[in-house]
Amino acid sequence: MSETGEKGWHRAYATRAELLREKLTEEIISGTLAPGTRLDEQEIANRFGVSRTPVREAVRHLVATGLAESQPHLGATVSGLNTARLTAYLDAATELEVACVRLAALRMDRKEHAELLDLHARMGKNLFDDPERYEELNSQFHEMIYVGSHNEVMVEIIRNLKVRLAPVYRVQLTLAQMARQSYAEHERIVAAITAGDAVAAEVAMRAHMLSSALVLERLYGSALDAQRHNQRDAGQATGDAA
Image (cartoon, rainbow, N blue to C red; front, side, top):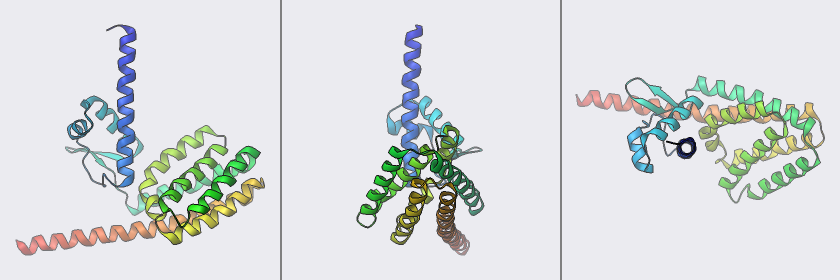
């Protein structure tokens, strides 16, 4: 194979692996692929009409980012979260968000301020009418702050972390009450950033992240309790049948 042909093959392979990675990430975040689901390379290859090589690379990336985990004798499965792990992720996310917003308050310019204000206004219009759209805009809101920090290293770290938390964040913003609270907290964050007040921005973001974490831990803890209850009932039924 010529050097040009070899480079072309690598580009095509990389593209297929990247597309598969994005698609599988979407399925995990949306819940289509539930925690514990085995990521069978042959099944995925058949479903997307590709060879197992790009599938293997995509799955390796999912394991590296924490969305999947490698199990002995099983291969890769979609990761689940226990309450301790969730708390650790939320603690890390809080500190990174606070650091980003402090820098954003100091570094965002007038153009970025205008874009942030516009986005916040659009979020208000979708608050009651379109919860799914509000969720999308919420992600854009936080992303705008990350970028506004003008620190590429922090942006990369927090993006990777938020991918791992995306499945549980989706649940929170489907609750109308939490969406309203989120928007009110955003109002204080926007005011601090546009005023260039780094201290107020830190305080507002920390309060926002902590209130979000409390809700998520409560919601996720309830889900884990229900899962354990169902497993216990299933085990008792099996014992009774025996």
